[in-house]
Length: 89
Image (cartoon, rainbow, N blue to C red):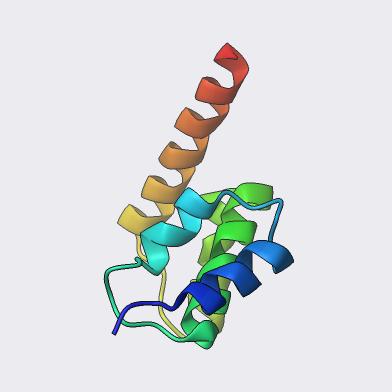
């Protein structure tokens, strides 16, 4: 069963400032998900939108997952590229 239209309508009403494309990276319409999954995806998208991928390291750490050097470097590199792209426009 796909994410229902009601779930997506609720989501768009509560997260109008967040890019829905970012949310779809975490909770695609083609996979099963309930409102809790979509809400978690929206929260992650909000973190990325506001503070970048480096802020996700705090989430990972809070979950008790150790952060390796590769993940740390990857998040910083993605944020650097994101800022460069934003500065071009």
